[in-house]
Image (cartoon, rainbow, N blue to C red; front, side, top):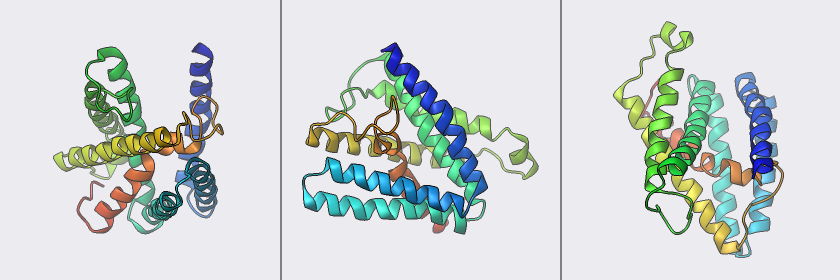
Length: 218
């Protein structure tokens, strides 16, 4: 257990700064990185899926999901900040769900993903709101008169919910395929799809909200 935790910890320490750097750096390096992640994700989805219809539908969705990330970064005003905020919401959702679930335990949320609890789901919302609230206190946001408002909380709740649903959806397909992880490319985490299951659902929703001006929090 300690060995597995150490792998997860060191993988996160290495990957998180790298991803943040690439997002801030932007195109074309970010484009190649996203393409690389897309290829790996499609491969893991292919290995996991025995149903051809599911594979085709899932592949089309994954193309739209990764396309959404590029569109946010390149076409939406303050795109790189939105990419970072969505990323932090998804990470905070995972961390908050894990911590609250482990500490408070309680009733299970769904049989599809037996480790998830109602307490963990509640913790996902709380932790993601607190993290983004903290981010908004940095000087950059203050200088640009960006305030943490009620619409910001709505935005966080929508994307945290979407991220949780994404996690549960991929868990369902893993159970369907009778596998624990989608791959083993990331030590301690499994496959790339295991790590980004919430993000591939959150980014398309964020793109729709931002592109059609349902929410602009920056």
